[in-house]
Length: 114
Image (cartoon, rainbow, N blue to C red):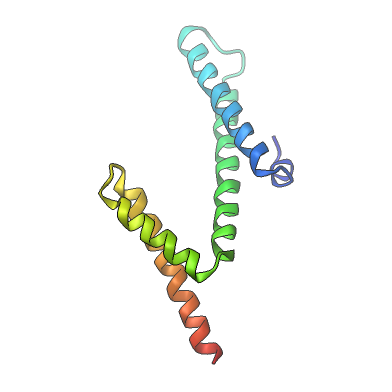
């Protein structure tokens, strides 16, 4: 799977590709544990493909986050701060830091633009 092909894919196609590749990796690992693989490098290739897809998804997520308005950004930040008590709070804390960084960058750009 080439990165150029993935860049041209839609978000839904990327999600589908990720799911299929993860299933394929699972099957390869299972086959590796029970039998001998004909091409052991397939596991490595599947891992790289998963990383490519996840990287593209994250890049698109950051681009979309940069395009949202200040009010929506503040609303997302407030929603994440409510979830900080839930399990897996490290993920929410990182998201809060990212959103706060975007807010401060926007405020600095508005301040220097005046």
